[in-house]
Length: 317
Image (tube, rainbow, N blue to C red; front, side, top):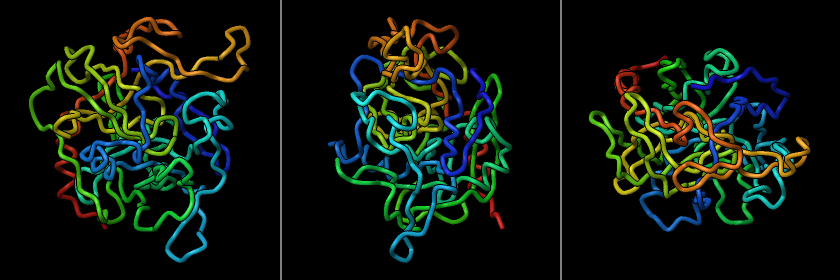
C-alpha cells in the first residue's frame, strides 16, 4: 500500500490531499457526475450520507445566523494546476477526504486521512465533516450559506488504522446527524465478481460526485478488491457501493496516478487526467505494480465492521 507523504499545509488552504503520489484515475469514459445531474434516485439518496472533510480554517460566519461560508477555497485549475479544459476545472476544491455515515453519530473514512500527515488527535481537532457539499446547479457556489445543521466536528477517533494490510478510520461525531440515514454495509461474505459499482465522494476535493460504471478487475485479495472506478485523491474514504442494491462494499483507499503534465517535456505545464482503458490497462502514465496494477483499490468494509459495531454502542462525553 502506498503510504502518505508528509506535506506542508498553509494557512486556510490546508488541502491535505495527502500527497498521495499516484492515486486514482479515469478508466474509459469519465463517469463522474454532480449530484443534481444524476437520474438515479437511490444513488442521490446515498449521496445524502456522504460527507466532506474540510479544514476548520476555511469556515467563517455567513451573512445569516446559523449559516457558514468557506473562504480561501481555490478552483481545481488554480489550486492544482489542472488545465482549464479539464472537466470540473472551475469548481471549488474544499474537501480533503471523503467519509460516510454508518450510525447516527458514527462516520467511516480512510485511515490515511487521520494518520497520513498528523496525529489522529490533531486531525480530529482541526477538520470538520460537512454534508451536502455539492453543486445544486451548474451555477451554484457550494462554499456559501452552509447551514450549521450540515456541519459536524470530530468528537473522538475510535480507531485510525494505516498498515500494509488495512486503511480505515472510525470517527464519533459531536452529535447525531440530522436529516439523513446511516448507510447499510456488508457484514459477511464477499462481493461477487460481476457486481456493478458506484462510488460517492469528493475527487480532488471537489463537490460531491456520483461515479458509476465501475467493475471489479481483481477480487482475490483477502482484504481488498480492485476496480475501474473513476476516482482521485480526495475520494479517499469514499463509500463504494453495489450500484443496484446500495449496499456499501468497501472504502476507497488507493489507485493509479491522477494527473500528468499536458506537455511531457515541461513538468510545469498544466495537468491533464491520466486515462486508462475500461480494463485498467494502457494508461497514459504507464502501468504500476502491486494491487494498483489492477486499478483503484477498495478496502473491504468487513475490516472495519467490528469497530463500527463497537463505536455505534459508545457514548462519548
